[in-house]
Amino acid sequence: MDQQAIEQFVYKEARLLDTRRFEDWLALFADDAVYWVPAGHDDIDPTQHVSIIYDTLQGMHQRVARLNSGFAYAQDPASRTHRLVSNVEVVSRAADAIEIATMMLLVELSRHKQTIHSARCEFLLHRHGDDWRIARKKVNLLKNNEVLESTPYLL
Image (cartoon, rainbow, N blue to C red; front, top):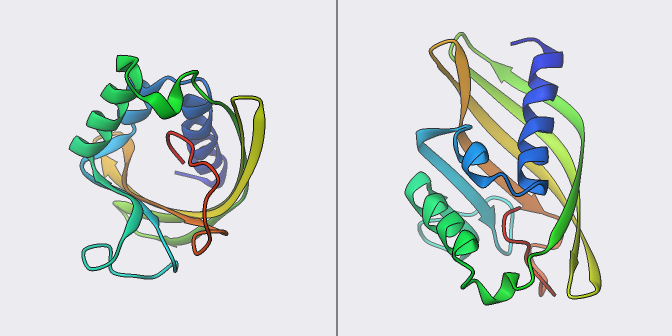
């Protein structure tokens, strides 16, 4: 996977979320994937401390099912989002794994209020046949130690 393919992968992930194509987004993840948004500090133990989100793939499927059910009150009406992904950096590379870091600016419009979230995202991609899957996604919100006025359905 070269730099351009890596960039296209993270841009696609952002686009799938912004267009609410959640099933396609879930297909980007490995079966043993973890999706984590720490609370309070970037480097805590999510099994010992509170997190904003700490989901396995099963939990992510449940989150998406709630969003699609029409019974997610916080998403009625559904937020509109735009993600700007930049500074795509390969942190490390092996034959079957790539660590990536990006910067993300997420703009959310919900109930006539616009909120901006800034984050550094870390991805661990594992080879899955001829493709790559997200084994871990960690979203380090800039404001993870402050009260969040709103939390988008998925960061």
